[in-house]
Length: 418
Image 1 (tube, rainbow, N blue to C red):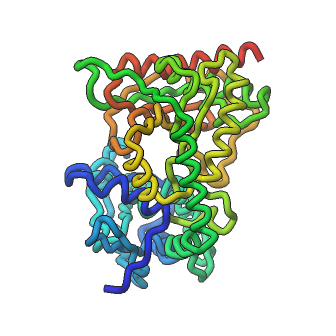
Image 2: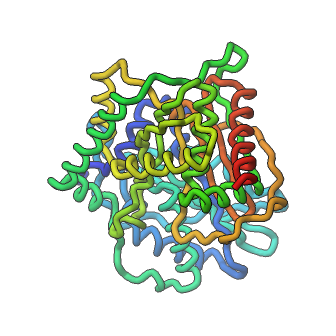
């Protein structure tokens, strides 16, 4: 076995989340995606394109030394890999019926690479590539990079060029240079300062009937149009507006004007690392003051500047943060967590979707994973609306739905007054 190098900060963050999971939950770090194939693409072309993408990105050829869970390492990327591609006929069944089993199979990261692919076919030939990956190999941004490159390689097998892209080993080396270590120290200082400033605040725990994890997704065309209108009026991002509405709803339940929130930082601000395929997402705390502010535009500006300050310190050593928290058992926990998902080169209409695009509705789901904070909202903007998926522990269905509807109604009402 080759000598293992250090994990990057993003990889280390993933490992910290999963290392103590019991066996039946090891799949919770997986994600499945369906990539549509152009008409006429055959198994040979699909395999060639997939091989070109995997050969280009070291993260997809990396295994890990996990013998010491407290000191994990990444091995040098393998120079070769299997290009076997399972083919599954789907008949007339919904394609989603074929994602659950592959997504639920764990990856044994010490001896296999963190991805698997299956070619799905219909009566008229191949229709989709089912791509399943472990989060340590690629986050949502990196997965979209892979999809775009796979599509390009299908159109032109040599279009990706002969070069190998930078990978997580190079990223780790950069993060542990003297300059990188100074950035890590500054990030730890950010955590320390906010823990000093934040008051204790937490969502009330439901009674026994509300124990456990619930997950609901709000989808709304009017909410997207409203968020865009407020963002323009407040001169901030749409993500800041949605964060403000969410924080306001949580703060009102908690009965606090100052809210400690965990934000998901993509950490892709440097041009060199913007499209590296690995996991770079990390939670970083932000303090939102005036969180029960009636004027959502004012609160959105506060959330905007607090977020920018937090994202400056998004890349940090999660083990050092864990040590800091262990030394400060009295430190408050964040009351909630928020992630506004961004994708590379995603173009959305500038005018906002019409209100009728997606009628406001909430659907309930069985959570695939319960890794992460106690109250976690994942927001995504698409052409036909805004979706906010809320995964929450021990608050019950009623409060979960109430939080989502309150956030929605705040957006729509504020936009009407702009």
